[in-house]
Image (cartoon, rainbow, N blue to C red; front, side, top):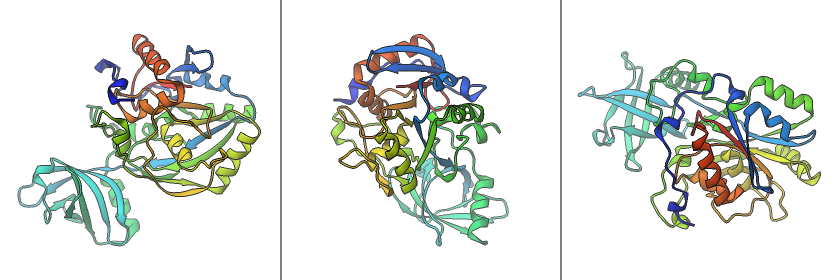
Length: 348
């Protein structure tokens, strides 16, 4: 399989700038792999495809306000700092992306507040836009994190050209988000409302949580034509023994097991054993799933509509078959489905 096998023309107006008014009333395209048929529904109809004791696996990562704006010392130039991951809690050292990067060199200082209560010093270069920063802040770790949260902005994807709005803090977060650490939302989960989850509970559908802290690597463009040469960036994953037990019970009882989102799917496929059972796991994953691939845990999945040539559409193609997925995407464009983070959903 080549990168160009996953190219298609996506009209700009189909990239969702805002979320659907009600979470569970986004459009839902349903793909049946067995019959190769496509249905058009609303997201809240997802419940009709599952029975008592079927299982949904959610990614309970929580997005933190990762985008900060600082001023460079001496020149006062405005610099965007996108927090990627904390490297050293005690020393307050972080991996970040900076923009514009050409202005930021090792030794430069960035000021984030008028009173200079939060300053960062550039201590290393990582990638073209990547830097390592040491934050200087006079206070406890809790106060430091509170300051980052206060100054930070919801990290909406760059394709959204509008300003961040107050509602984004809530809507760019799943309702079951629990463990902070993601710089992008696990977007398939954004469609679940409290009301829908209550209805699922009443129907007897079971839930399990895994954690995969979504980094920007998920969205990095693929620069090579040969997929086997693409390297994913590492993201942190945690699967508790309790979650593994719940998931394995569902597999053994031959229930439908639905992975909510590509990040959930990557987490469980990182820790599947040879006998198709899930093991508890805590560590990092750079797993890249593309066709052909034999999935071990989930037999259904929910996902959003992804951009051309992305690692995400490749995973979907591995799960549902490339030709069927490309046909479904053609239909999605014809029916004006919204794409990407705030877009509509697909159940396979």
